[in-house]
Length: 165
Ligand code: SF4
Image (tube, rainbow, N blue to C red):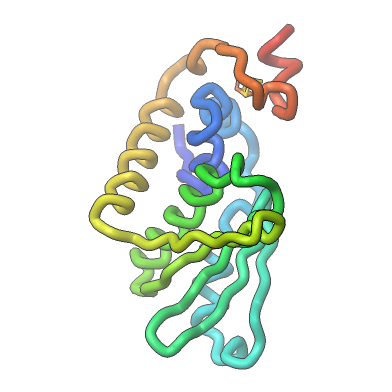
């Protein structure tokens, strides 16, 4: 099956492997490729003065250019429960940008908790991303989704009718 690993699939991967399989078989809307937009914005001179915001899913990406780096700031409004999926998503975008020759750093902000976390591509975090991409690819290539295991997230999941019927 033809598909491309997206930030949404990376996010699902941190939540539920069954969701990865189900989601990969849905039509993927354009907004699921924000790294393309991020790359385009980084190329635009106009954003030197303006901060550009890109909204998707549970995070808002705020693009800032500093002296040394392009900086992506993901603002996570919900609690740090969303930390792992937001962190993996941001790492994934940093990885995609690196593949396009753009070096960037990330920061996750938790305004309600008044804290921030630096997200950076290192040998280790890059390996996390490539492992996630590899495992997602393996999951999606299977004929059947991984079995249903009820988790707290199920009550907010778009596939709950499907999984629980
Ligand atoms: S309902 Fe639960 S098991 Fe089913 S895809 Fe969603 S999170 Fe995964």
